[in-house]
Image (cartoon, rainbow, N blue to C red; front, side, top):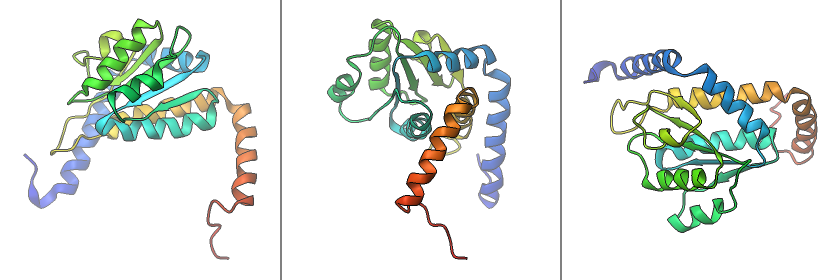
Length: 196
């Protein structure tokens, strides 16, 4: 369905359409409820499998800088997923990210977390998603495929919005954290300062 002579424009235009649809459909109430739940949680478990692993890693990387109670669950074997979440309980948040085709492992992990009375946040594509019924906060983002790969532009924008909202609420702590990190990065030459 994509004009082979203009693939770049076609894909970028399709992604812009997904962003517009996501803005229209995502619930601001669910978004605010998700931010509150993350900030109040004893532990935040983040899980994304298959193509959603990259979204989970991005969110996990930044939330770990903002909060000291984040656990990124790695997409390994079925048993290891349960070994990483078996302590989950009421007072914790399980943030599941899943888009078609839905991984059976994440559906089972969400079901398990729900059975332990954790709060569930789902970043997924629609009400029809198998993880949506378990979630108290459902953040829907369009991810229709332009080819064999999922478009993660809209889901990544939802993830980015969560990071921004949480960082705004943790502004004072954030300044202290990044002052300390800058000193560590300088001392251990983590980043190239460039040539003067």
